[in-house]
Length: 291
Image 1: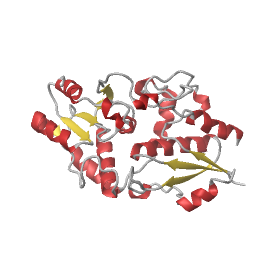
Image 2: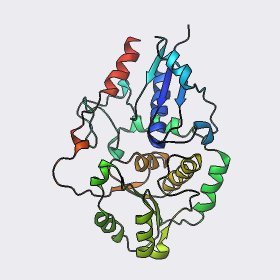
Image 3: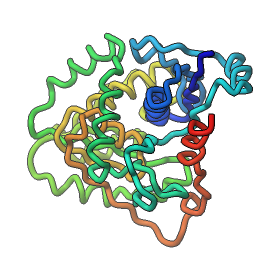
Image 4: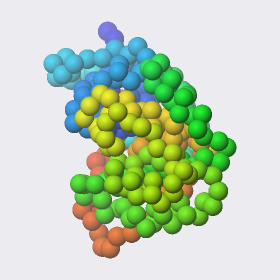
């Protein structure tokens, strides 16, 4: 009897990509077949097949609810890039966004062990964006040169994490760069307008079909993937704190870009830091060991 793993891809675009890669690695490690549940919603209003050419067996909500009750179908429900047991990512390894066990690699960039990086990159390189997406990327890329710097800005507008963003810190990071231009991706139209006025022709901004930060429409997510792939093309990346979009740009660039995290400024402890982080790494791996 065949056994399966279901990638339960939820959240934003990059959270879903991370879930898929984790599920693919687990499927290979435990000799299971892969199924993908990627349902469009307000966080990602686009189907997997609208973004990528890859032929992956997808299931709908009704199928997922039915199969999830069957022990032959294990569920990978995570936004993290899960390390495998043989990769020896030890307890208390993580510093950026710690799971209960501390053996996670998210937002750790160059601290991630080389063998783990190499295996994750093998799976990421197999993702094939739709032809019209790669064409848009290649066309805009002509505006870049060897000195272009990628800047990904998450203002978290309307979210509790907005406390992490400080525009003065952003400008301090950008002002240090006296030469070259910036490719800027931001979720706030207001901040993009400020950057345009402040840096003029040095700021390169992709002309989206919808408004910046649009997650709800297929066009918005397709344009987000274009921006993500463009961020991945440069040697230097100014990354937003705890942004999986910044993180995935680094991964898709082959882990080659030099990364500078845009500093955060806040007082006291905010609610997100008090949230109990689930043991998704431990629970997922245990399910496969015992399944």
